[in-house]
Amino acid sequence: MSGLVPFNRLVNSGLSRPRTGFEDFYNMLDDFFSDGLTQGRSLMRDTFKIDIEDNEDAYLIEAELPGVKKEEIDIGVDNEIFSISVNRSEEVNKEAKNYVHRERRTSSMSRRVRLTGVDLDGIKANLENGVLSVAAPKAGKASSARKIEIV
Image 1 (cartoon, rainbow, N blue to C red):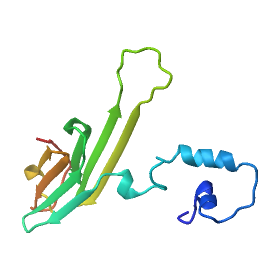
Image 2 (image 1 turned 180 degrees about the horizontal axis):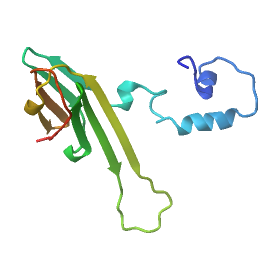
Image 3 (image 1 turned 135 degrees about the horizontal axis):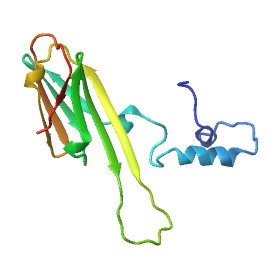
Image 4 (image 1 turned 30 degrees about the horizontal axis):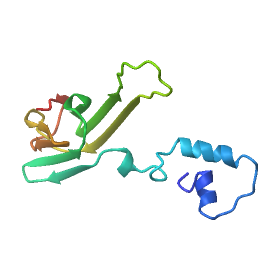
């Protein structure tokens, strides 16, 4: 499936396809599901970026989460799998009642990485200026699950 190219991108790239009469329909579908700025889907664009530094005594994790509130973030460790999840729901509450068009946006993103030998009781998380910083001290083998509070 990695070699599939949406129809209008194939046509617009200069490669020709037999004309079927449904070109406008396929182009409309492709355009509807794209963001209009860049073509195709990408892990780097569709989720948030994380950096993990392995120091002698701790893992230092930084996640770029601009505009995200700490109430929208869930962090946890379960069987050595460290996870960060973001669930956002945007609602527009305007008093005007003559709407022609109105939309809501809901998004969910998550990242999971394996961190071995983490001290679950010593994990600290901080959200400042759109950057989530997590310090996970190393210890023995992680043995249970825990939810981590953001300060």
